[in-house]
Length: 238
Length: 222
Ligand SMILES: Nc1ncnc2c1ncn2[C@@H]1O[C@H](COP(=O)(O)OP(=O)(O)OP(=O)(O)O)[C@@H](O)[C@H]1O
Ligand SMILES: [Mg+2]
Image (cartoon, rainbow over all chains, first blue to last red):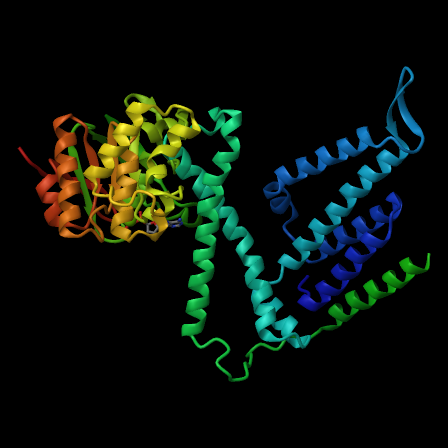
Protein backbone atom coordinates (compact mmCIF):
# COMPACT_ATOMS: atom_id res chain seq x y z
CA UNK A 1 0.00 0.00 0.00
CA UNK A 2 1.15 3.53 -0.75
CA UNK A 3 1.30 5.64 2.37
CA UNK A 4 2.13 9.30 2.75
CA UNK A 5 5.62 9.77 4.28
CA UNK A 6 3.99 11.53 7.21
CA UNK A 7 1.79 8.52 7.84
CA UNK A 8 4.98 6.48 8.09
CA UNK A 9 6.91 8.94 10.25
CA UNK A 10 4.29 9.14 12.99
CA UNK A 11 4.07 5.40 13.80
CA UNK A 12 7.85 5.09 13.39
CA UNK A 13 8.44 7.85 15.96
CA UNK A 14 5.90 6.38 18.35
CA UNK A 15 7.25 2.83 18.03
CA UNK A 16 10.88 3.82 18.51
CA UNK A 17 9.97 5.93 21.56
CA UNK A 18 8.04 3.03 23.03
CA UNK A 19 10.94 0.69 22.35
CA UNK A 20 13.13 2.96 24.46
CA UNK A 21 10.63 3.53 27.29
CA UNK A 22 9.54 -0.09 27.67
CA UNK A 23 11.82 -2.80 28.98
CA UNK A 24 10.01 -6.08 29.16
CA UNK A 25 10.76 -8.67 26.50
CA UNK A 26 7.08 -9.25 25.89
CA UNK A 27 6.31 -5.58 25.21
CA UNK A 28 9.31 -5.21 22.91
CA UNK A 29 8.18 -8.30 21.08
CA UNK A 30 4.73 -6.82 20.54
CA UNK A 31 6.30 -3.61 19.19
CA UNK A 32 8.44 -5.72 16.85
CA UNK A 33 5.32 -7.43 15.51
CA UNK A 34 3.71 -4.03 14.95
CA UNK A 35 6.79 -2.72 13.16
CA UNK A 36 6.85 -5.85 11.04
CA UNK A 37 3.19 -5.41 10.09
CA UNK A 38 3.85 -1.80 9.12
CA UNK A 39 6.80 -2.92 6.99
CA UNK A 40 4.58 -5.47 5.23
CA UNK A 41 1.84 -2.88 4.83
CA UNK A 42 4.14 -0.52 2.91
CA UNK A 43 5.79 -3.47 1.09
CA UNK A 44 9.32 -2.79 2.29
CA UNK A 45 11.84 -5.10 0.59
CA UNK A 46 12.84 -6.78 3.84
CA UNK A 47 14.74 -9.72 2.35
CA UNK A 48 16.99 -7.37 0.38
CA UNK A 49 17.70 -5.11 3.35
CA UNK A 50 18.45 -7.95 5.71
CA UNK A 51 20.71 -9.60 3.18
CA UNK A 52 22.67 -6.38 2.81
CA UNK A 53 22.94 -6.00 6.58
CA UNK A 54 23.83 -9.63 7.27
CA UNK A 55 27.16 -8.67 8.85
CA UNK A 56 25.40 -6.25 11.16
CA UNK A 57 22.99 -9.02 12.12
CA UNK A 58 25.87 -11.28 13.08
CA UNK A 59 27.23 -8.44 15.23
CA UNK A 60 23.86 -8.31 16.99
CA UNK A 61 24.11 -12.03 17.60
CA UNK A 62 27.61 -11.53 19.03
CA UNK A 63 26.40 -8.83 21.44
CA UNK A 64 23.48 -11.05 22.40
CA UNK A 65 25.85 -13.87 23.30
CA UNK A 66 28.12 -11.55 25.26
CA UNK A 67 25.13 -10.29 27.25
CA UNK A 68 24.03 -13.85 27.81
CA UNK A 69 27.36 -15.06 29.13
CA UNK A 70 28.73 -12.10 31.03
CA UNK A 71 25.61 -10.80 32.72
CA UNK A 72 25.84 -12.33 36.21
CA UNK A 73 22.84 -10.74 37.94
CA UNK A 74 19.46 -12.38 38.45
CA UNK A 75 18.65 -16.00 38.87
CA UNK A 76 20.38 -18.87 37.19
CA UNK A 77 18.58 -20.42 34.24
CA UNK A 78 21.28 -22.76 33.04
CA UNK A 79 24.04 -24.26 35.14
CA UNK A 80 26.85 -26.67 34.53
CA UNK A 81 27.77 -28.37 37.79
CA UNK A 82 27.81 -25.41 40.20
CA UNK A 83 28.81 -22.83 37.61
CA UNK A 84 26.10 -20.49 36.39
CA UNK A 85 26.11 -20.11 32.60
CA UNK A 86 22.95 -18.15 31.78
CA UNK A 87 20.92 -15.97 34.12
CA UNK A 88 17.41 -14.70 33.53
CA UNK A 89 18.43 -11.06 33.49
CA UNK A 90 21.23 -11.85 31.06
CA UNK A 91 18.71 -13.44 28.73
CA UNK A 92 16.34 -10.51 29.14
CA UNK A 93 19.02 -7.89 28.45
CA UNK A 94 20.29 -9.80 25.43
CA UNK A 95 16.83 -10.28 23.95
CA UNK A 96 15.96 -6.65 24.73
CA UNK A 97 18.97 -5.45 22.79
CA UNK A 98 18.28 -7.62 19.74
CA UNK A 99 14.58 -6.72 19.71
CA UNK A 100 15.28 -2.99 19.94
CA UNK A 101 17.81 -3.14 17.12
CA UNK A 102 15.37 -5.07 14.94
CA UNK A 103 12.68 -2.49 15.62
CA UNK A 104 15.01 0.34 14.61
CA UNK A 105 16.07 -1.51 11.43
CA UNK A 106 12.47 -2.19 10.47
CA UNK A 107 11.51 1.44 11.08
CA UNK A 108 14.42 2.52 8.87
CA UNK A 109 13.29 0.25 6.04
CA UNK A 110 9.75 1.59 6.38
CA UNK A 111 10.96 5.19 5.99
CA UNK A 112 13.19 4.18 3.06
CA UNK A 113 10.14 3.12 1.02
CA UNK A 114 9.34 6.79 0.32
CA UNK A 115 11.44 8.59 -2.28
CA UNK A 116 13.71 11.27 -0.87
CA UNK A 117 11.76 13.88 -2.85
CA UNK A 118 8.52 12.88 -1.17
CA UNK A 119 10.16 12.85 2.23
CA UNK A 120 11.58 16.35 1.74
CA UNK A 121 8.16 17.58 0.59
CA UNK A 122 6.42 16.08 3.57
CA UNK A 123 8.95 17.56 6.00
CA UNK A 124 8.45 20.96 4.36
CA UNK A 125 4.69 20.61 4.63
CA UNK A 126 5.23 19.94 8.34
CA UNK A 127 6.71 23.49 8.34
CA UNK A 128 10.35 22.41 8.57
CA UNK A 129 12.53 24.93 6.63
CA UNK A 130 13.39 23.54 3.18
CA UNK A 131 17.13 23.95 3.70
CA UNK A 132 17.00 21.85 6.82
CA UNK A 133 14.85 19.15 5.23
CA UNK A 134 17.17 19.06 2.23
CA UNK A 135 20.20 18.74 4.50
CA UNK A 136 18.71 15.80 6.38
CA UNK A 137 17.98 13.91 3.17
CA UNK A 138 21.39 14.69 1.67
CA UNK A 139 23.14 13.49 4.80
CA UNK A 140 21.22 10.22 4.65
CA UNK A 141 22.02 9.69 0.98
CA UNK A 142 25.72 10.00 1.79
CA UNK A 143 25.70 6.77 3.80
CA UNK A 144 25.37 4.38 0.83
CA UNK A 145 27.87 6.56 -1.04
CA UNK A 146 30.44 5.92 1.68
CA UNK A 147 29.67 2.23 1.55
CA UNK A 148 30.43 2.18 -2.16
CA UNK A 149 33.65 4.11 -1.63
CA UNK A 150 34.78 1.59 0.96
CA UNK A 151 34.29 -1.35 -1.39
CA UNK A 152 36.00 0.48 -4.29
CA UNK A 153 38.94 1.32 -2.10
CA UNK A 154 39.25 -2.25 -0.84
CA UNK A 155 39.44 -3.45 -4.45
CA UNK A 156 42.03 -0.86 -5.46
CA UNK A 157 44.15 -1.71 -2.43
CA UNK A 158 44.24 -5.36 -3.49
CA UNK A 159 45.13 -4.33 -7.03
CA UNK A 160 48.30 -2.86 -5.57
CA UNK A 161 49.24 -6.45 -4.78
CA UNK A 162 48.27 -6.27 -1.12
CA UNK A 163 46.89 -9.48 0.33
CA UNK A 164 44.55 -8.10 2.95
CA UNK A 165 44.32 -11.42 4.74
CA UNK A 166 48.08 -11.67 5.19
CA UNK A 167 48.73 -8.30 6.80
CA UNK A 168 50.48 -8.91 10.11
CA UNK A 169 48.45 -8.03 13.20
CA UNK A 170 50.76 -5.16 14.10
CA UNK A 171 50.10 -3.46 10.77
CA UNK A 172 46.31 -3.89 10.77
CA UNK A 173 45.63 -0.50 12.33
CA UNK A 174 47.85 1.21 9.76
CA UNK A 175 46.06 -0.68 6.99
CA UNK A 176 42.83 0.91 8.16
CA UNK A 177 44.25 4.39 7.73
CA UNK A 178 45.01 3.58 4.08
CA UNK A 179 41.43 2.44 3.70
CA UNK A 180 39.70 5.34 5.42
CA UNK A 181 41.89 8.21 4.28
CA UNK A 182 40.78 7.91 0.63
CA UNK A 183 37.17 7.16 1.58
CA UNK A 184 36.91 10.28 3.71
CA UNK A 185 38.71 12.40 1.15
CA UNK A 186 36.44 11.22 -1.68
CA UNK A 187 33.33 11.82 0.41
CA UNK A 188 34.48 15.32 1.38
CA UNK A 189 35.22 15.98 -2.30
CA UNK A 190 31.72 14.91 -3.27
CA UNK A 191 30.22 17.08 -0.54
CA UNK A 192 32.22 20.08 -1.69
CA UNK A 193 31.30 19.53 -5.34
CA UNK A 194 27.68 19.23 -4.34
CA UNK A 195 27.73 22.48 -2.39
CA UNK A 196 29.43 24.34 -5.25
CA UNK A 197 26.96 22.90 -7.75
CA UNK A 198 24.08 23.95 -5.49
CA UNK A 199 25.40 27.50 -5.24
CA UNK A 200 25.86 27.68 -9.00
CA UNK A 201 22.26 26.64 -9.49
CA UNK A 202 21.08 29.35 -7.16
CA UNK A 203 20.05 27.23 -4.21
CA UNK A 204 18.53 29.51 -1.53
CA UNK A 205 18.90 32.54 -3.75
CA UNK A 206 16.10 34.34 -1.95
CA UNK A 207 12.98 33.29 -3.83
CA UNK A 208 10.42 31.29 -1.99
CA UNK A 209 10.52 27.74 -3.15
CA UNK A 210 7.35 26.24 -4.50
CA UNK A 211 6.61 22.65 -5.26
CA UNK A 212 4.48 21.22 -8.03
CA UNK A 213 3.62 18.23 -5.90
CA UNK A 214 1.39 18.74 -2.93
CA UNK A 215 1.15 15.68 -0.76
CA UNK A 216 -2.36 14.94 0.42
CA UNK A 217 -3.24 12.68 3.30
CA UNK A 218 -5.74 10.07 2.17
CA UNK A 219 -8.07 8.29 4.49
CA UNK A 220 -5.78 5.24 4.75
CA UNK A 221 -3.03 7.60 5.95
CA UNK A 222 -5.36 9.02 8.58
CA UNK A 223 -6.36 5.52 9.54
CA UNK A 224 -2.78 4.39 10.07
CA UNK A 225 -1.95 7.52 12.07
CA UNK A 226 -5.06 7.31 14.23
CA UNK A 227 -4.45 3.64 14.89
CA UNK A 228 -0.85 4.22 15.90
CA UNK A 229 -1.76 7.06 18.27
CA UNK A 230 -4.46 4.91 19.78
CA UNK A 231 -2.08 2.00 20.31
CA UNK A 232 0.54 4.34 21.74
CA UNK A 233 -1.85 5.74 24.32
CA UNK A 234 -3.01 2.27 25.21
CA UNK A 235 0.59 1.16 25.63
CA UNK A 236 1.28 4.05 28.00
CA UNK A 237 -1.81 3.11 29.97
CA UNK A 238 -0.96 -0.51 30.71
CA UNK B 1 49.10 -14.81 -22.83
CA UNK B 2 45.60 -13.69 -21.94
CA UNK B 3 42.95 -15.85 -23.59
CA UNK B 4 39.31 -14.93 -23.87
CA UNK B 5 37.03 -17.81 -24.76
CA UNK B 6 33.56 -16.97 -25.95
CA UNK B 7 33.20 -14.19 -23.39
CA UNK B 8 29.86 -12.47 -22.99
CA UNK B 9 29.38 -9.64 -20.57
CA UNK B 10 26.44 -7.43 -19.66
CA UNK B 11 25.99 -5.07 -16.72
CA UNK B 12 23.31 -6.37 -14.34
CA UNK B 13 21.22 -3.23 -14.92
CA UNK B 14 21.22 -3.78 -18.71
CA UNK B 15 21.22 -7.54 -18.90
CA UNK B 16 19.47 -7.52 -22.30
CA UNK B 17 22.17 -5.43 -23.97
CA UNK B 18 25.52 -7.17 -23.59
CA UNK B 19 28.56 -4.90 -23.91
CA UNK B 20 30.58 -7.85 -25.24
CA UNK B 21 29.09 -10.93 -26.82
CA UNK B 22 30.82 -14.21 -27.67
CA UNK B 23 34.24 -12.64 -27.83
CA UNK B 24 37.24 -14.91 -28.32
CA UNK B 25 40.72 -13.54 -28.72
CA UNK B 26 44.28 -13.92 -27.50
CA UNK B 27 46.36 -11.08 -26.14
CA UNK B 28 50.13 -11.44 -26.26
CA UNK B 29 51.77 -10.26 -23.06
CA UNK B 30 55.06 -9.22 -24.68
CA UNK B 31 53.83 -6.56 -27.11
CA UNK B 32 51.99 -3.28 -26.96
CA UNK B 33 48.38 -3.70 -28.04
CA UNK B 34 46.21 -0.68 -28.69
CA UNK B 35 42.49 -0.68 -28.02
CA UNK B 36 40.53 2.04 -29.76
CA UNK B 37 36.85 2.69 -30.34
CA UNK B 38 34.14 5.26 -29.88
CA UNK B 39 32.86 6.36 -26.47
CA UNK B 40 30.79 3.76 -24.73
CA UNK B 41 31.77 0.79 -26.89
CA UNK B 42 33.10 -1.08 -23.88
CA UNK B 43 36.85 -0.46 -23.74
CA UNK B 44 36.94 0.23 -20.02
CA UNK B 45 34.62 -2.72 -19.44
CA UNK B 46 37.03 -4.94 -21.40
CA UNK B 47 39.93 -3.79 -19.20
CA UNK B 48 37.98 -4.43 -16.00
CA UNK B 49 37.15 -7.94 -17.23
CA UNK B 50 40.83 -8.68 -17.83
CA UNK B 51 41.57 -7.68 -14.23
CA UNK B 52 38.87 -9.94 -12.84
CA UNK B 53 37.04 -6.87 -11.49
CA UNK B 54 33.98 -7.86 -13.52
CA UNK B 55 32.96 -11.46 -14.08
CA UNK B 56 31.84 -12.61 -17.54
CA UNK B 57 28.22 -13.70 -17.74
CA UNK B 58 29.37 -16.51 -20.00
CA UNK B 59 32.75 -17.83 -21.16
CA UNK B 60 36.14 -17.78 -19.50
CA UNK B 61 39.25 -15.65 -19.32
CA UNK B 62 42.65 -17.24 -18.72
CA UNK B 63 45.81 -15.48 -17.60
CA UNK B 64 48.82 -17.63 -18.48
CA UNK B 65 46.56 -20.68 -18.56
CA UNK B 66 44.94 -20.00 -15.20
CA UNK B 67 41.26 -19.12 -15.03
CA UNK B 68 40.89 -15.57 -13.69
CA UNK B 69 37.93 -16.70 -11.60
CA UNK B 70 40.32 -18.75 -9.45
CA UNK B 71 42.88 -16.02 -8.85
CA UNK B 72 42.59 -13.69 -5.88
CA UNK B 73 42.64 -9.97 -6.73
CA UNK B 74 45.94 -9.23 -5.06
CA UNK B 75 47.61 -11.89 -7.18
CA UNK B 76 46.22 -10.49 -10.43
CA UNK B 77 47.16 -7.03 -9.17
CA UNK B 78 50.79 -7.91 -8.71
CA UNK B 79 50.96 -9.49 -12.19
CA UNK B 80 49.02 -6.82 -14.07
CA UNK B 81 49.23 -3.12 -13.27
CA UNK B 82 46.00 -1.26 -13.97
CA UNK B 83 45.75 2.49 -14.41
CA UNK B 84 42.17 3.70 -13.92
CA UNK B 85 40.69 6.43 -16.07
CA UNK B 86 40.53 8.53 -12.92
CA UNK B 87 43.80 8.33 -10.93
CA UNK B 88 42.29 9.62 -7.70
CA UNK B 89 40.69 6.23 -7.13
CA UNK B 90 44.16 4.77 -6.73
CA UNK B 91 45.78 7.11 -4.24
CA UNK B 92 45.88 6.09 -0.60
CA UNK B 93 48.79 7.63 1.23
CA UNK B 94 49.42 11.15 2.52
CA UNK B 95 52.84 11.62 0.97
CA UNK B 96 54.27 10.85 -2.45
CA UNK B 97 57.00 8.60 -1.14
CA UNK B 98 54.64 6.68 1.11
CA UNK B 99 52.34 6.10 -1.86
CA UNK B 100 55.08 3.95 -3.36
CA UNK B 101 56.24 2.29 -0.16
CA UNK B 102 53.11 1.56 1.86
CA UNK B 103 52.19 -1.80 0.26
CA UNK B 104 55.61 -3.01 1.28
CA UNK B 105 55.63 -1.58 4.79
CA UNK B 106 52.14 -2.97 5.41
CA UNK B 107 53.22 -6.45 4.39
CA UNK B 108 56.60 -5.96 6.05
CA UNK B 109 58.46 -6.70 2.86
CA UNK B 110 60.26 -3.38 2.54
CA UNK B 111 64.00 -3.38 2.24
CA UNK B 112 66.89 -1.28 1.07
CA UNK B 113 66.29 -2.54 -2.42
CA UNK B 114 62.61 -1.50 -2.37
CA UNK B 115 63.55 2.00 -1.22
CA UNK B 116 66.12 2.32 -3.99
CA UNK B 117 63.53 1.25 -6.55
CA UNK B 118 61.14 3.90 -5.21
CA UNK B 119 63.85 6.56 -5.50
CA UNK B 120 64.61 5.52 -9.05
CA UNK B 121 60.94 5.60 -10.08
CA UNK B 122 60.34 9.01 -8.50
CA UNK B 123 63.27 10.37 -10.48
CA UNK B 124 62.09 8.68 -13.67
CA UNK B 125 58.60 10.17 -13.33
CA UNK B 126 59.99 13.55 -12.23
CA UNK B 127 58.26 13.51 -8.87
CA UNK B 128 61.34 13.70 -6.68
CA UNK B 129 61.40 17.44 -5.90
CA UNK B 130 58.96 17.36 -3.01
CA UNK B 131 58.32 13.82 -2.01
CA UNK B 132 56.42 14.75 1.14
CA UNK B 133 53.64 16.47 -0.76
CA UNK B 134 50.13 15.12 -0.36
CA UNK B 135 49.21 13.23 -3.57
CA UNK B 136 45.71 14.70 -3.56
CA UNK B 137 47.15 18.19 -3.94
CA UNK B 138 48.94 17.23 -7.16
CA UNK B 139 47.52 18.06 -10.58
CA UNK B 140 45.73 15.30 -12.50
CA UNK B 141 48.71 14.76 -14.80
CA UNK B 142 51.06 14.48 -11.84
CA UNK B 143 48.66 12.10 -10.12
CA UNK B 144 48.70 9.90 -13.22
CA UNK B 145 52.49 9.82 -13.19
CA UNK B 146 52.45 8.98 -9.48
CA UNK B 147 50.02 6.09 -9.95
CA UNK B 148 52.17 4.79 -12.82
CA UNK B 149 55.24 4.94 -10.58
CA UNK B 150 53.33 3.12 -7.84
CA UNK B 151 52.24 0.42 -10.28
CA UNK B 152 55.84 -0.08 -11.42
CA UNK B 153 56.88 -0.83 -7.83
CA UNK B 154 55.50 -4.36 -8.21
CA UNK B 155 57.35 -4.78 -11.51
CA UNK B 156 54.22 -6.23 -13.17
CA UNK B 157 54.43 -8.47 -16.24
CA UNK B 158 51.74 -6.53 -18.02
CA UNK B 159 50.09 -3.13 -17.83
CA UNK B 160 46.57 -2.05 -18.70
CA UNK B 161 46.42 1.70 -19.11
CA UNK B 162 43.00 3.30 -19.50
CA UNK B 163 43.49 6.55 -21.41
CA UNK B 164 46.90 7.23 -19.92
CA UNK B 165 47.72 10.22 -22.12
CA UNK B 166 44.54 12.06 -21.16
CA UNK B 167 45.61 15.30 -19.56
CA UNK B 168 49.32 14.63 -19.93
CA UNK B 169 51.53 17.37 -21.39
CA UNK B 170 54.10 16.75 -24.09
CA UNK B 171 56.88 16.02 -21.61
CA UNK B 172 54.85 13.55 -19.55
CA UNK B 173 53.82 11.80 -22.77
CA UNK B 174 57.51 11.47 -23.52
CA UNK B 175 58.17 9.90 -20.11
CA UNK B 176 55.32 7.43 -20.64
CA UNK B 177 56.56 6.66 -24.16
CA UNK B 178 60.05 5.91 -22.84
CA UNK B 179 58.62 3.65 -20.18
CA UNK B 180 56.68 1.70 -22.80
CA UNK B 181 59.72 1.33 -25.07
CA UNK B 182 61.89 0.23 -22.17
CA UNK B 183 59.38 -2.37 -21.02
CA UNK B 184 58.90 -3.75 -24.54
CA UNK B 185 62.65 -4.34 -24.68
CA UNK B 186 62.25 -6.51 -21.57
CA UNK B 187 59.32 -8.26 -23.32
CA UNK B 188 56.80 -6.78 -20.93
CA UNK B 189 53.86 -5.58 -22.92
CA UNK B 190 50.76 -3.55 -22.27
CA UNK B 191 47.22 -2.82 -23.36
CA UNK B 192 46.78 0.81 -24.29
CA UNK B 193 43.16 1.96 -24.19
CA UNK B 194 43.17 5.33 -25.84
CA UNK B 195 41.58 7.90 -28.13
CA UNK B 196 45.06 9.30 -28.79
CA UNK B 197 45.66 8.00 -32.35
CA UNK B 198 49.20 9.37 -32.78
CA UNK B 199 50.34 7.86 -29.50
CA UNK B 200 48.77 4.49 -30.33
CA UNK B 201 50.29 4.49 -33.81
CA UNK B 202 53.69 5.33 -32.44
CA UNK B 203 53.87 2.64 -29.77
CA UNK B 204 51.52 -0.23 -30.55
CA UNK B 205 52.46 -3.33 -32.47
CA UNK B 206 48.87 -4.34 -32.93
CA UNK B 207 45.66 -2.36 -32.71
CA UNK B 208 42.24 -3.67 -31.80
CA UNK B 209 39.21 -1.66 -32.72
CA UNK B 210 36.02 -1.99 -30.78
CA UNK B 211 32.54 -1.16 -31.95
CA UNK B 212 29.07 -1.93 -30.67
CA UNK B 213 29.17 -5.45 -32.08
CA UNK B 214 32.65 -6.85 -31.98
CA UNK B 215 36.39 -6.42 -31.64
CA UNK B 216 38.72 -6.84 -34.57
CA UNK B 217 42.33 -6.31 -35.35
CA UNK B 218 42.75 -3.33 -37.64
CA UNK B 219 46.48 -2.95 -37.87
CA UNK B 220 49.51 -5.07 -37.31
CA UNK B 221 52.97 -3.60 -37.56
CA UNK B 222 55.63 -5.82 -39.01
N1 LIG C 1 28.40 0.42 -14.03
C1 LIG C 1 27.70 0.34 -15.18
N2 LIG C 1 26.41 -0.06 -15.16
C2 LIG C 1 25.68 -0.15 -16.29
N3 LIG C 1 26.15 0.13 -17.51
C3 LIG C 1 27.43 0.53 -17.61
C4 LIG C 1 28.26 0.66 -16.46
N4 LIG C 1 29.48 1.09 -16.85
C5 LIG C 1 29.41 1.22 -18.20
N5 LIG C 1 28.17 0.89 -18.66
C6 LIG C 1 27.74 0.87 -20.07
O1 LIG C 1 28.57 -0.02 -20.79
C7 LIG C 1 28.95 0.51 -22.03
C8 LIG C 1 30.47 0.52 -22.17
O2 LIG C 1 31.03 1.41 -21.24
P1 LIG C 1 32.60 1.63 -21.10
O3 LIG C 1 32.84 2.53 -19.93
O4 LIG C 1 33.27 0.33 -21.10
O5 LIG C 1 32.92 2.42 -22.47
P2 LIG C 1 34.32 3.00 -22.99
O6 LIG C 1 34.56 2.35 -24.31
O7 LIG C 1 35.38 2.86 -21.95
O8 LIG C 1 33.98 4.52 -23.22
P3 LIG C 1 34.94 5.83 -23.08
O9 LIG C 1 35.67 5.95 -24.36
O10 LIG C 1 33.96 6.95 -22.91
O11 LIG C 1 35.82 5.64 -21.89
C9 LIG C 1 28.33 1.89 -22.10
O12 LIG C 1 27.20 1.81 -22.95
C10 LIG C 1 27.92 2.23 -20.71
O13 LIG C 1 26.72 2.94 -20.70
MG1 LIG D 1 36.51 4.17 -20.82
